[in-house]
Each structure stands twice: as structure tokens, then as C-alpha cells.
Amino acid sequence: MMEKAGQNSPSETVQRLLHANDVSRPKVLIWAREADFFVESLSSRFPNITFVKAIERGDALQFCGDCDVLVARDIEDFDGFVAAMPRLRWIQALTTGTDSIEAIPDLPPNVIVTAARGFHGPQMSELAFLFMLALSRDYPAVAANQKEHRWKRWPQKLLIDKTVVLLGVGAVGEELAKRCHAFGMKVIGVDSVRKSAPGVEAIHSPDRLTELASGADFLIILLPYTTETHHLVNAGVLDAMKPSSILINISRGEVVDEGALVRTLAARRIAAAGLDVFQTEPLPADSPLWDLQNVMITSHVGGMSDVYAEQVMPILIDNITAYAAGACSRMRYIVHM
Image 1 (tube, one colour):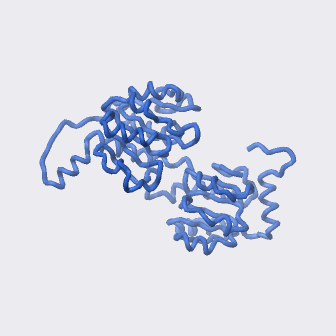
Image 2 (cartoon, rainbow, N blue to C red):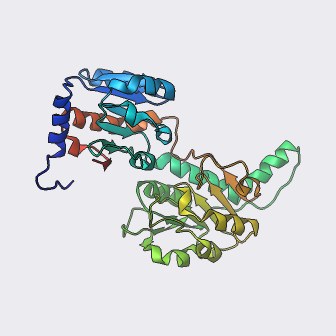
Image 3 (cartoon, rainbow, N blue to C red):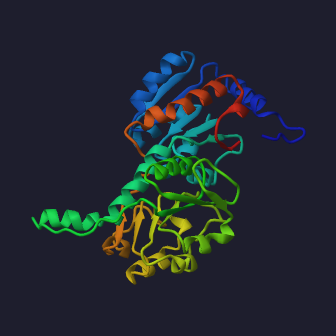
């Protein structure tokens, strides 16, 4: 990270702040459902750091007052923490997205914010396949037939030889491409930065999205949300898709024009959509998406897994090591410093 002339380096800044507060033993609050596991694993590795655990938000607010570091999973419910933590120097999010933290009006400029990224490929890829298989084979009808004790058969659509267009080709896209190839699928990428990636036949710029969507059997959205990606999948892109195409969004709801998507699905201009993310979350009870027969909804579970704590642990270890050494510029996935 570039340093501005006349300013302290990140390492010098943190060391100065620590000495100013006479903090010889940093105190870290871990607020997460896996807090017990994190504290037990990290305490033995970092004996000179005090770790405090909290599972409930109320406990986290109660214990955070004298902590220098906050490690948090439920970052969408962050109101009040900055004001309650006068010694706060670093926030480690246990999530990929940190928008809600970076948007805090009173977030001090000297507070470091780091994200947890690079390990979500397996769970995100498996969710994408859940949608592809379930929607291709009309699993909702299968489940309904079982509930009604009804024996009904129809030709089953296969994934082999189908074309997947990945909108966004990062670490998750690479993992998904590997699995698509195992199913005999063709993978095309759309990305504004990358020109090639393992398992991806070709990567094109976003200005070709509408053209590429027209040939997609599955259009899978893997992009982060930015001003540039806002409603990137709009009515024009949706109208270009084939009637047999399926849209899958497992990244951010705002990348899709949700109103246009509702109209497209209601008119059956595309076959179906698998949606894990939405413009408003939780998805409001009165959203028409709930009742559309060609929509499969999951509740923003794409990044979750039963081994999440183990997956994120290497990032925690690396970043705590760097923080304790005053080498914060070496932290992984810095989003605010």
C-alpha cells in the first residue's frame, strides 16, 4: 500500500497508538457463533494477547469497551460499536463484504478494517450446482409429487454440453469452473480485469454481456457490488437470454435490476432463477419473488459452511500475527486503513 509523504507508515501508526494507550497486551473481542472455537484456538497460539468471546450482540457490546480489536461475523448489525470502543484500532470482518463497516459515519480514519476472502469457492460452487440441478430437473415439482404421493415421470435435462457464463471471474469463479468441467459444461467468463483463468474457455469485457447472455444456458452472477456493477444485469440483458436459460445470483442482489427480473420471470421469458441474494435482506414477505413458481430462493447462505471457522482461521492467524508485530501493512485483505 502506498504511503503519503510526511505520514507515518501503517506499522509506525499502530505502534504509536498502542504506546499512547499504554497497551502492552492487546485485547481482542471475538463476536461470532464460533467464538468458543476461535478463542480456544488462538489463545494458545498468541499467549501475549487477551481474547474475549461473545456470541450474542448484547454480550459483545457489554465486553467491547476496553478492547483494541473486534473480530466480528454479524457486521450488518454494527450500530453502536465504534462509539463503545474508544481504544478500537482494528476490525477483522469474518465475511467477504465489509460495506456496512466502511459506511459507518463515525469510523475513525486510523481504524484498520480487513475482510475474510479467498476461501468461499467450495460452498459457493456447491450452491450454484444446487440451483442448476434443481431448476433444470424441476425439483420443486419432484418434491410436490412426493408430498402428494404422486408418481410422475418426465425427461430429465442434463448439464452436459450446457454453456455457463460467469459474470465475474475470481477465486469463486475458478472453483466453479473446475466443477463445471467435471460435468462436461462449457465455461465463458465476463470480467473487467482478468483476461484468462484456469478452466475458463474465454473471458470477455462487460460490454459484451448482453451478447454473451444470449448464448448462456446458465448466467451465474459472482460480482461484488459497486457503483459500476449496480443493475449491470438489467432488462436488456434479461431480454437477451434464451427462454430455456436460468439466472443464478449468489453474489449481491443489487447487481440485478430486481424489478426487471420479476417481470421477466412472471412472463416466463426465461426458464427460472436461483436467488441467494436480494436488494433488500431479509427478503420482504410481500416480495413477489416468493410466490413465483420458477424461482428458487435461499436465504443468503452461499458463503456459509459447516467448516467456516476452520476455513477463515488462516486469515485470522496471519492478520493477528501482523498486528501484534506492528506490521499492519502485511495484513491480508485490507479494505480501510
